[in-house]
Length: 635
Image (cartoon, rainbow, N blue to C red):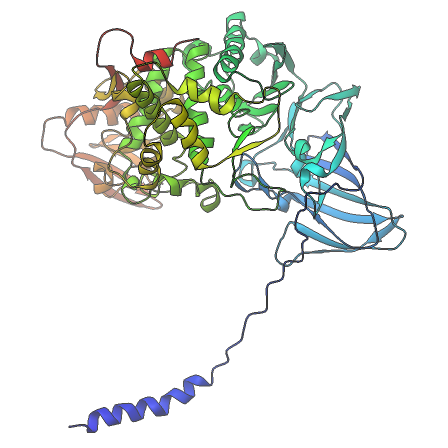
């Protein structure tokens, strides 16, 4: 009875040595040859000279002079981990033509084998400065990245135009920048400059501040003073887009006024809104301490009466001067642009900025109160039906800038994206309602704003915070188990979004067959049909499927992003035809039948849905002014 077992053991014994003969290498040790940043002063001032005149080809030409203290090894770095991007987004692939010289002789360079943004040099004896020459070959088409040079304007970001010496906190590296722009152009930055014609010489500063001081320049420009410290600098593809009415500028002045009243301090000596209205240069919304980069499509002023459009952008980016730049998560602050950022507190950094952005847009009148309520309803409904919240907690979405690099996703509702923005907004709206409830209406998020951000007036350095700091400030305003409350909303999965900010502040989320004015405007601008809250489907004007919600009727019918709806119920597709089919199917039994093309193949999809059109809105639950009304009212 033991013979089969013995035979099996013998077979194993005879085959094992043959397997053991396979080669088994060991890994080479990983040695970081880039000097770690130290909090010491760099011995000298970097000199940066940039030629930004080649707008036809999108090429910036750079000459950089870097003082050196001694001969021997030296490492220069290209900025990789960029503030505001929350991820390693430096465009090292666009740095071209790199040549180093010292005393007129070429100094060979070698890229680090681990860090592709690091360049090693061996400085010869007697060399007191290294001259670097290179180009930044910016994108000329959208598939290469954001376009930053257009025929009539440009956006110069110093992080893309410079190298810095390794081994130092970037705040300790002095730098002086000069830029030549096309003749007749005007340039603006948060960094002061003097100019002779098209040549601008910028105030000597530290490298940290330089990277935080981008430039917009262009042929068509207009400037408005919004306060004694804040300017609105607008660039456009054509002069017509600069035709702002007085009431438009007054709304922007109120934005500054309401922001200062809210926070109780200003963390800049001068603040510059850098604002481009363009369909030729890429859009952007990026925060800086004394400025912000803002780019929207045509119509910002000229189509003002057609809906809020992109007018939430400036309130959001302005708020970042306080939240994200002055106050910053301790694990997100880094001593240089090589040190990895950790994004765990982005639900405070971006989420609360999103919250205050919507509050300030309503308080200033840049966006009306009703449009603001409609926008909040859309946010709440989107997140309340987001299936991915059942497996992926909000805190994990703070890793998304690194994980996904903001690339498109096929199943956003299931994969989740950077939900810490809008769900962070809902969390802080709920905190506002809880503060009002616990204090009998005497406390609100306005008290948090002054306690947390309103310190050190005039200081435009950085004050870091931890989760415990946030909890401590909240408890100082109104005692409660804020740690448990916030952790439950950020670290746990859930079936629905945190909607207590509405229910606790006098509103509730409801659905109706008619879209709000905001949704009508958004749909008209997109040119398709948004049936997210009925079919779970978004379709473009040409029939391209741009969104399918996980678990929705459209999902169950087998639809996916990328297909093209060619017919609805036997009729050629149009957005109105699809809406008509949804209405006709209400209360019935017959599915909504679509013909969908994927590549060269066609297939029929039968969507089993019979509840008609559904669009979210906020409905007041009581009479008189409530907490949300007060939150959105000007101070």
